[in-house]
Image (tube, rainbow, N blue to C red; front, side):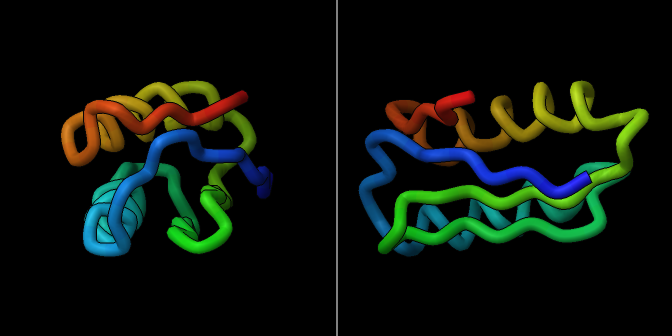
Length: 72
């Protein structure tokens, strides 16, 4: 399943790259991309694990950029 999410308060391109790397390492994620310019997150993950993957993605993003929120 591939879904796109809007990001709020993502402040730098370096943080976006760190978030992308962290999300790609989550088990069940096939691919992920974080666009700083578009303030967008795209995640492609296994259907049966998608909710669990999103919880871990939110936690990973909070570690890198505490003010950034994933709008679902």
